[in-house]
Length: 311
Image (spheres, rainbow, N blue to C red):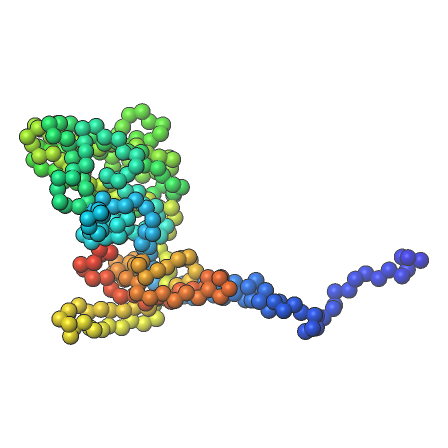
């Protein structure tokens, strides 16, 4: 009898307006509509695309040696670029390591920071009376794709003085000459040891000085982000004040690839390497769901610290 009276549930019920929950439209928007807009924005920037390198100003890190209790950060500093934080700016898709006097893992023999000079940042030099010395530093490496982006060394040597750099991985007992290829071959290790040897012909010769290594390696294969550039404008608003620079402004529309953008960041065109300082940022994030960015940027002037950041 029970089997004859059983009826399977039906799926043709139509929900009436009175049965809908108050937040149902919001749930539909967040789970269906807004994700579709996000995908639409990503397709839009690929339609008429401009490829850019994005540099974000460091918000935390080691205090640069150019920034002391008696002075502010030096705008001409090639370690922090006027930000006061070692490295200055992070490039999208990369990791940056700076080996300088502020590095926490440095071990030194007959080498000390040179505080006698007024120039900043502080450089390494041989102790008085020493003809040979060295520094060793362990550089921790983050997960990466095994490719370098930029490797630069800043040093100062005169006749009679010399600097030589070496590198080794955790599995090596002996150092080898530090070259770009040697470093790139060891990027997949958790760390590498770097050694810099200081030598001079006599104790009366000027000691060689070592400033820093700038090591930036790739964490992504593609380091560019895409944007649309609707229009540009030029103005010369400061002419009446005697400043003759032309300030060209450009608008950029970007999707949600970048999670944070501020007015302290800058971008570089991958086509012509023109640098743009971000002046204003408008974020589209309904319900805290990031969709896109509308940016206004101006040309970076030749004398600005951002103009000297390695790209």
